[in-house]
Length: 192
Image 1 (tube, rainbow, N blue to C red):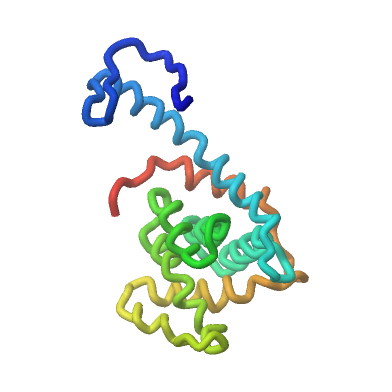
Image 2: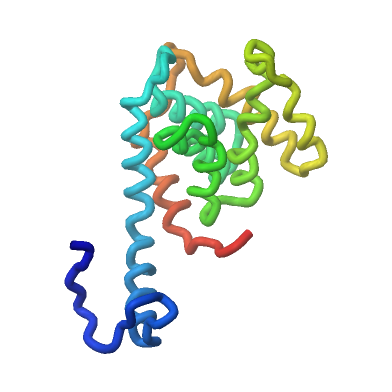
């Protein structure tokens, strides 16, 4: 249990600290090859959101598509459209910290601004409902000095919080698929 057959012949080692240079080169090649599957994985996660409703009148896939449609129609750039599409993919694991999960999933491929907007979107979204929960609806104000503040406000106020309309003319996932493939086929950034 826990072992698989690999086609590497040579010294391996029992831990990462002991891996031979040859084996690490072999593994790195497979990791690079694995990147080709990222667009398909993102699309699969998005499709899985069709079964996630959380009590809303539309499912989370439709909400994500509607958010991205509004972003595209609002003049957002490619990274922000794709980030809008993916902003809630963290909900597939946890609603409580979904912005951080989604942001880290897309971070290596999107602009720093798009990443940041996704990461803090709940603080901005709170303007529209936090008061009902006894929370500060102006939590966004703690981000007022960030250069992407206006973009995050536009995202929350014009695209995200309005994207629960079952009658909105929402573009299908097929429309966004080429954009997803373009963004997630980029060489991922390391670090910040």
